[in-house]
Length: 174
Length: 292
Image 1 (tube, rainbow over the protein chains, first blue to last red):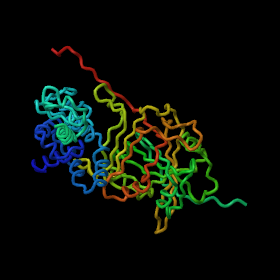
Image 2: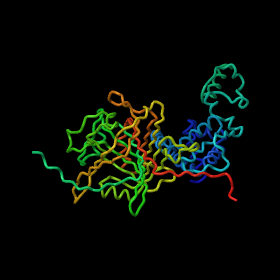
Image 3: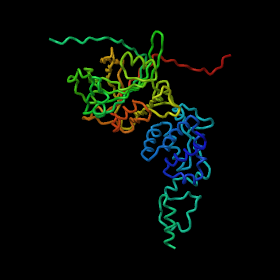
Image 4: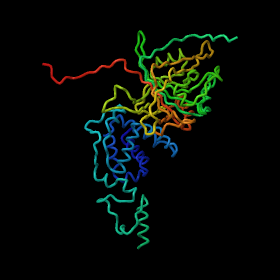
């Protein structure tokens, strides 16, 4: 698989895992950083397994086929599924914890040099700013994205309807 | 006057040097098993109103005068009895059967298919004993006395079976993926079962005609067992998460056979485990002082 194909699979599969669209994930500016981190942490043997499973999911046509590929190729694997869980955490919280040694051992893969199992990794500021957890909650990462003029007078609005709803409600008030 | 005894031809006894055997039992409708038994002279045993199938993961060593062999295989078995004994099969619950109460030894395993990573074992099993067997490969991580240490202790069972003689690098596609965790909350307390001997039935073609091969694997020890022993039939399944079976997408007849048998996600009802003792153990100690 070429580097560009891997990036496309990583992005599409991340969309499948997070529930956010590829455009939205691209908009976080974190795709390349996250892909590089995952590949560096997983190592080449596990990455081959990951991309094969992810490709099976994103290339399946239709929701039912994707769900079936996810069940067979991803969920059943004691190697790929824990990696997917870590990727979901990465997108939603912007943080990463180096997997345990037993995970590499179970996949017959050496742990990439320089890693310490259980080591928490804090990525760039952009990972904090763009983490999906705040977005899903209709909130804003403290100290980063401002909430906007007048937002303090509005009820909380959850999910990705925030922008449209806020705009509509501010319009009504004005 | 009693009928004459049936004439037999002994086919020999195969001695195992070591054996690890984990049998996972599923309660399935008899209707999904019967098509797989067509023409075999066998009927599915009925326990608590359903048939029983099992996946039996085995690792064994064997030795001959001129060879030493280590084999991994999984038997995909249906618990059956021969039609010529119809009416004599004992009425048993699942719990009774798993406890070893078929003392008539009427019920036995019919190997629907056996993926095995040894070409020699496949040839011998198929040609000598009529087993339905093919060369396959596995990825597995299972408990073992040689890996019981603080850093890499494996306490659960994971077995993935491939249709190819060599495991694909990506671990895809596969025939089935099986996980067993007997430490799952709610799993019945560990018991022991005098399940041995474990009978089996096969068909062997001799001079273009099918004949029945009967056999019994005598296990020199008790099985560890996990199932609900005190329930009123039907047996209560093992808790969710104890056994996770996923039928994969590998193009092979066994994938289709398993997809048919497990299409309605039947419950796992019991796990039996036999793990033979090591024949010897060798310990090593490093002394701190350097040799002058």
